[in-house]
Structure formats: structure tokens, C-alpha cells
Picture 1 (tube, rainbow, N blue to C red):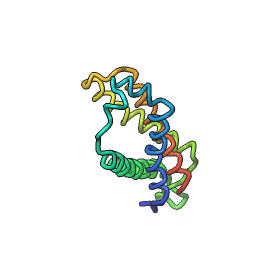
Picture 2: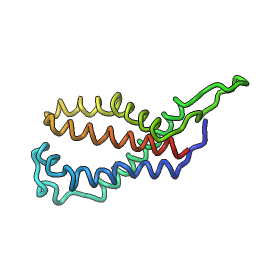
Picture 3: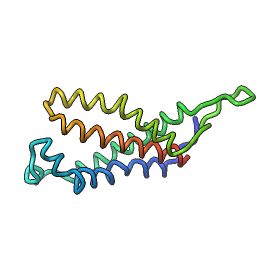
Picture 4: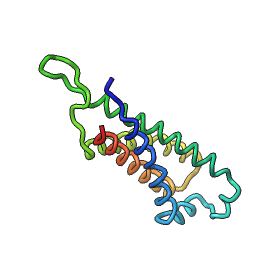
Length: 146
């Protein structure tokens, strides 16, 4: 297995929290709440420390998974016939891998759940865009920062 840069995994794992604070806050927060049929009042009294702490831990797990997936697809055989990992690393290449993981794995899972939960199309679109962008940025960071 290739070496893992844990600092890159931590930095990439912070992306959903940072981007989410902007995306679901001042940028599209009102549209998101509307897509759920909620108001800001509906979120009062929840355990934010548990919610944000759990989300951060899960984002670190996602970051680790993206890194491992990127490394597994970045293999080549050198002239001696040996398997070589990490043969091609750029931000754009990693972003492509991250976006493809989101489009082919993550988005179908939550869209399926959203259909059963009767979420609005607007909500599904907002969440799909968010996670595709997050995975692309995370994949880019993890691929470029080997």
C-alpha cells in the first residue's frame, strides 16, 4: 500500500464542514430550509455539538475512503514489471475521481432515500450539487497533496 498523508486527509475532511457552513448558510440556506419545509425555528433546541461533531468524524471517514480509492486506481506497472502506486497526481485528476465517486455512488444512495422520504426535487438537487462539489474538492486535495 502507498503511504497515507494524514494531514491531507484531515484537511480534505474539513471541506464538507467549511463548504456546508457557506452553502447551507448564507449562500443557499433559505432555499434549503424551504426545500425541506422547515424554518430556522424548527432547528432550535437540537444538539449541535453532537450533530457537527458526528458530521466531522464522518467526513474524515469519507476523506480516508476517497484517498484509498484514488490510490487504488492510480497504479501502473514500471519497466521492471513491479506495481507502482501514485503514478499520476494532480488536483484536476483527483477532483474528477472525487466527482465520479459522488455521481456514481453517493448521489444515487441519497436520491433513493430521498424518494422514499418524499423530499422535494429542489432538496435533492441542492444536496446532489453540494456532495458532488465536496467530493471533487476533497479528491483534488487528496490527489495533489500526496
